[in-house]
Image (tube, rainbow, N blue to C red; front, side, top):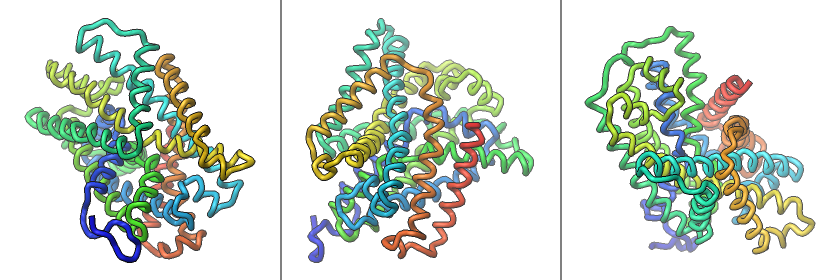
Amino acid sequence: MAQTPETGHAACGRWTKFDVVWMLNLFGTAVGAGILFLPINAGMSGIWPLVVITLLVGPMTYFAHRGLARFVLSSSRADSDITAVVEEHFGLSAGKLITLLYFFAIYPILLIYAVGITNTVESFIVNQLQLAAPPRLLLSGVLVAALMAVILLGESFMLKFNEWLVYPLCAILFCLSLYLVPHWNTSALGQMPDAGSFLGTLWLTLPVLVFAFNHSPAISSFALAQRRHYGDTAEQKAARTLRGTACILVLFVMAFVFSCVLSLSPAQLMEAKAQNIPVLSYLANQFDNPVISWFGPLIAFLAIGSSFFGHYLGAREGLHGILVQMSSTPETTATSRRVRTGIALFFFVTLWLAGWLNPGILDIIESLSGPVIAVILFIMPMYAVHKVPAMRRYRGQWSNAFVLAAGCVAISSLLYKLF
């Protein structure tokens, strides 16, 4: 690989394997098991609000995540993760608060993934393989241990493994999108809400897609990897990779969403919502097609697995930041192998227990984390642009106002639905 004489880092001219692997890892972080419910939630009000939302969600996803990556890269220290950058720019007290919120915004999603992957594999064993369900305590422990083993083998192996998950996930989404084309109907095209309903639908549905595309938990690790690999050109390379991630998210995910929505009427989507089942399960029942029902668990498994790794990186980073901030010897704690081992054990035990106990309250906790993620993703980087000298060069860009407005819309909608 070519080296730049100024920095000694990899040259910035063309796409490399490093860029592609990180783009796929960010894609995998964004696409969780919720994709199986996304067509129902996003398509119940007809096709036209969905068209407008699709035009907006790509730029919103790209500019917001680019802002967060810029924030991480604005540190004066090359090894500062997001928790250290917050403390550097906003002070110790604000740093502690945001680090705590950052951790508790991401950690519940990990618990939900532990529950989700246990339920998905158990359901697959019972319904598709027609076998007796193994003891849930054992099944959850094996699945969580397997996911964490991939992470503990190192970042390069984790990225490679995630790549193995994302390729079939993209392929299956694309093939299913094409498979449903003969079943398309025009009932959704004929539903045009009035102006008030149209705007209300946009307001309530846009955050659903924005957070379906959210890969902020992996952005800090991604930005640090870009800095290690590209040095002074990390910001430009990170922006290009994030742009590619937004593009493939819109291409593969929205193609799947549109194909599902066009295959069902708005009334059928409402019925699927009332039944609280994934869209592929509803389609399999409608078309009496067992093949589609097999792909549902497979997509869920691939999506949960690929999304788990990115969220684990963010949660581990948050917990490590909390422990460093609480320590009387932060420099020693930051590099302590014992601390890192303790963090790994904490995640294994709590995720194992969550997968075994299957608590129902996790969905409520996840909804509470949404507004916090929105503040960290949309608001905090834009505030830093205007307050932090290291980010002064980004002032005056129209995208800043766009991200700030989008963040306010997303937060207001999340709070409305929450309360």
